[in-house]
Amino acid sequence: MGESIHEAENAGALNNRGEVKRIKGDLDGALADFNRAIELRPDLASAHNNRGLVKRAKGDLIGALADYTKAIELKPDLAAAYNNRAVVKHAGGNLDEALPDYDKAIEFEPSQAQFHQNRGDLKRVKRDLDGALADYSRAIELKPDWADAHNCRAVVRQAKGHLDGAIADYNRAIELRPGSVQFHKNRGLAKRAKGDEPGAQADFNKAAELAPESAEAVNNRGEARRAKGDLDGALTDYNRAIELKPGLAAAHLNRGVVKKAKGDLDGALADFNRAIELKPELATAFNSRGLLKKARGDGDGALLDFSKAIELKPDFDAAYNHRGRIKHTNGDLEGALADYSRAIELKPDSPLTYNNRGEIKRVKGELAGAIADYDRAIELKPDLAEAYNNRSEAKLAGNDLAGALADYDKAVELKPELGGDEARRGKLKRTEGDRTILDILRASVKKPKK
Image 1 (cartoon, helix red, strand yellow):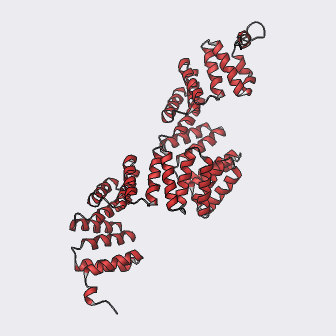
Image 2 (cartoon, helix red, strand yellow):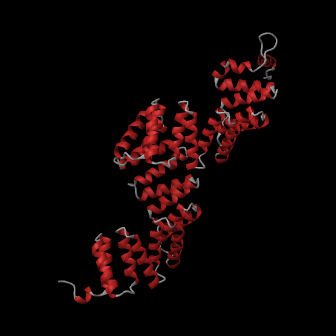
Image 3 (spheres, one colour):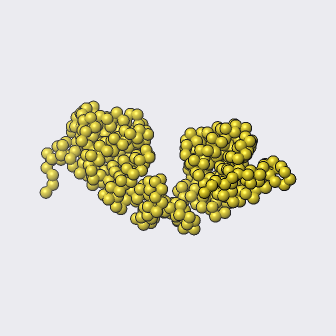
């Protein structure tokens, strides 16, 4: 038996029926019902809000915004309309206007987990990590079994360097939704950052198993294999990822890194070029191409690539370090010193960068500063033979012959090939026939009593 004329013409009934149709995916039918409901009752705020949802789903964002705004005008405490309007503004990149709408939605309906989740997403984009963390935590408090909220909070915790907390959240997200490729991928990245490469590989393998046709998952598995030294396995995965998704810049970049490691420099260059073509803002691709150009003797090209990487990612410590090496080679000592200092500022625990900066200071005659940098490099990496060797030269230049001898001996102990460097030994002035100062000192230093 069909609907009565009264039911069909009742705005409230039409609004409700339209909502059922929307949920079932019948957007055109829903839109017709909401249009008729509004025609019958132009002041029905919920119908405007619901029609906005349909318009957004159909891609009519301007129309959706107009409907949400009308709903708020008719019912200023309609929390859902504020949230929905914020979502459209957020998606359009209008973050500063979206935030007050999320605030209003939460003010009128503070127990709605979705509103906190949405505001957390916006704060994360704005790099307000503490604010995002608070919102995700509140969403979880309101809805403890919400896997997406645990995953989002984990992403923020990871960004803040709280890896244990992030992994705990990923664990919970995976427990709630074990078939999520993204959750396994994210946990794998967190485990890798924590130094748990076997755990990372297990997660990347699981992600690829769950989605064998996912180029991203296969690419991540390739990264795990590369980290283990399985270059052939990694190459196979990168090839497959590119086959599945030819436009995946990360897979081209990673394949280039493997090809370079295997000695296929032309193939590596082609992959780096393709990665940059696909994603011109990919700083790591410029950095990797710069390293390749440096290895091939194209210092000018390398310098341009490292500079571009820094332009795209101003906190890219490795690119500053690599550019510093090129500037050093080119004789631009002040430029090299500035780059090494910036790299250290960004990553104060890099022994190689301290060693490199020490070299600049030594060449400039700043021996105390050079030795301080070598000291720090050795403190961070006690088996860094080059730092001992370089500190030996700095001490020799400062006439600390005993200190130079001790450091040189340690360098040779750690890296025996340094002892066969005749040019290096020649810097110790000869005296008493064929014996060097180093030989004299070594013979005269008394061994400690047992």
